[in-house]
Amino acid sequence: MNKQRRTRNLESIALTVDLCVVDRATRQAAPLAAWALSRTAGPTGEARWTSERWEHVLTLSVSKPTKRPFAMAKRMKVELRAMNALLAERNALLVPLAAHPFSDGATLAYHAEDPANAVLAKLFDLRLPGWCNSQITGLRLPFTTDDEFSRLHASVRLLLPLLPAIGAASPFLGGAPTGIMSARTDACLHHVDALPELIGPVIPEAVFSEEEYYRTVFSPMAQALARTDGGHVLDHFSMNARAAVARFDRGDVEVRVVDVQECLSADLALAEMTMCVLRAMGSGRWVSPYLQRAWSEDDLYPIFQQTVREGGQAVITNRDYLLMFGLMKQDQMSAQKIWQHLFVELYGELSEECRRVMAHILEHGCLAHRILRKVGREPSPDGLIALVDALGECLAKDELLA
Image (cartoon, rainbow, N blue to C red; front, side):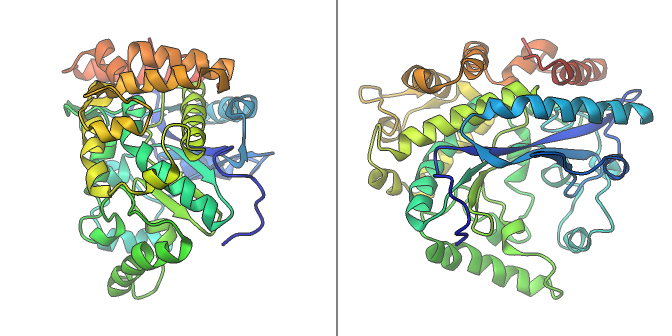
């Protein structure tokens, strides 16, 4: 266990934001990440750019956890403007696309010089959208001790099924409608089918200590990788494909089910809202952490599937699940209304910026629903190009999609 961190869990958050590099003329994904990174000065302050696997994806990250996510906004916006100015030299720009709506996986390139990518290409079909067309807002929640991990992991597991209701932003893939609000997440449910141990039950197993996590989660993963990866290039931390992954090497749990949003303010608001809900859960505001730990991944996964497909319009009929959030007299409720309830409950703990953004999302729906209202459920190719342009403008101006 990492003993260096002193930030209490459930009181702070760090995040990463994946952004798609797009050619201004064609609006196709452009393989310019390595070129751009070679021309930047490297990390400046707490915000930095990286590109983990794909040549068309740049990730802006703030690794130091903070209690006030919007405190990161100024530095992140500076980095964003600078990167867009650089990409303009190659007639490209950054667009917040959880899944590019019409780029073909066969044309998307991974960083070939990375030994891990070469191994992955032998094990999996990297042209599948779950691999090559998946951009998220990664939420990293720190912990230091087993007790903190136990509380955090219990709360995260329970909240995961609700997050697509406010975070879904990818209704199109391959130039066509999918009927799924987070098609990106849906694609990621099957991208490691060749080694199912890597994703397990998707919702993490009910384990609440580092030792138990290694035995239950990492050990089967390591055995599966050992059968295929003779060079031991891949490790269990980076290959854990669950909806939330425990990183004992850096002392956090990373939530990976929130699609990247249309602007940094939206990403930061979802991060702050998630942090506040998890803090309330961890303190036993509605039910005790003991009751939270009792939930099986088999009971949580069907709810998760609902919100992935339907976003905030998913109707939750599991009364026991509603009880976990203080909803005692409800037989059923839409996921959107559950979030409205949580927003009212925690209103006094949210920043003014977060209140403004969350009020917009809870009134008009998750980004996927707003995208569908803007371009229709079966848009033409020109309509999808217009969507890429609109999202690029939202990012550049830090504006919410109406």
